[in-house]
Length: 514
Ligand code: HEM
Image 1 (cartoon, rainbow, N blue to C red):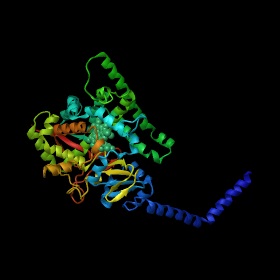
Image 2: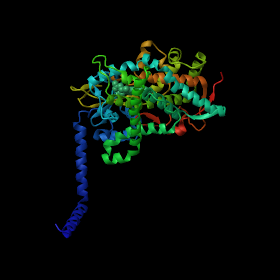
Image 3: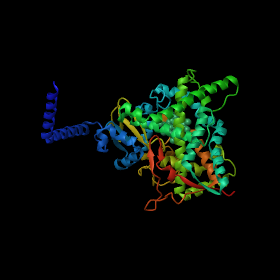
Image 4: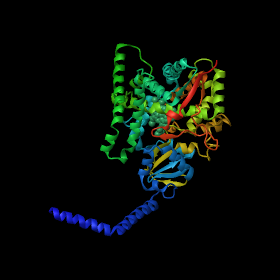
């Protein structure tokens, strides 16, 4: 076809389209209407309530997640639609604690492939695997190194890099003046970076190094960005996330170096350090007597590092924020610590003598479940029934922890920070309430680092409340227009984080009078 004819054809086409624009628009609308009707009327989930866009396309959920709104959206929808709603064409979100317990404790409900976003090295870690046999094997192999008794053996390290490191930093800031302003969110993030990386890398990393803060924020951001991967062409994703991928690669190299340095150290000395790196090198499946391969060690180390820092740092952040919003709880927790201790508080002592502070942490985990707003599982073959609805095999079930934790049907005055709820009532009631907090997950895939997290959170808070008085600067708001305590703005990627930590996480500290 010569050039003139092509131009003529293009003219003809544009002419035809413009004179038939109304007809074409109607055709398109009919097609869309038909697709919507088909989706709504033939979907096996059609009897379950839920927002229309979520029924039509998976992209709705993905877009909300990519914009950091997964938690707030899940909360809003569970309030509007109740204990079960459609959140994807092939997915439901559930909030009744009994349903969540059943789904999460039934191994046949396997983890959903969303966990592949956390598969960094091409091979599965304990967090990402969906194979039942591998889960049992890996939990048998690693489990003994995450018990309270093994974590206690690392107490000196945990204290040195946790509570004591923060005290040293804040004391040095207070040497210059009687009071100072700290950004507690940044403090906890740096501190947990130093602490978890010491346990996993076996090396001390400087506590106050901004480079490290950038490393970890950018790496988690990079992983979160992978969630948008399905929305963008691969090449565009690669270009956009190159700076973050670069930072993440640095951490991966660091893991590699740490393992070979530890092996050299072991060859030169008979001392075996007690930390998670050594645990990964030593651990053995009691049944098959097999050790982890170097690639498996690499995958697990990376996962422990990235999965361990943010949840602890941000739970501590929300705990301090909530204590500041509820001055009566702050006073009671502080009085409790100061009436019991005068010097460094160890974990066992804190657990035995600080029930109110422990309840404050539990209440924080309930009110702001940092990493686990929607825990996804896949319905096994044969399907299941939830709230009277048949849910076919292959449907994704999201355990909506935040929706569940703040449901008025299941909790009294759920939006109020009320630690006493874990101390009052019969022991059966208290046990049930504790078992209805799903922030560490539940069942056979419950968080492996739970005891390590509690160790850090309790010792850090107890020791800081013992040594310092906290006050909010006047610039930080405490209440909404009606005078009720108001949570600071948050954003959710891998974790529920403060949106504006630079302004919202300021704290005036002074040394407590002894
Ligand atoms: C406040 C702190 C933490 C919270 C709230 C938390 C939360 C969670 C949740 C909700 C899961 C389960 C996900 C699911 O069932 O799909 C999980 C799994 C896991 N967590 Fe944590 N985590 C915390 C700290 C840690 C730490 C410090 C480590 C280790 C350094 C860790 C290691 C793991 C591992 C290895 C798994 C995978 C277990 C499995 O799939 O069998 N976590 N965590």
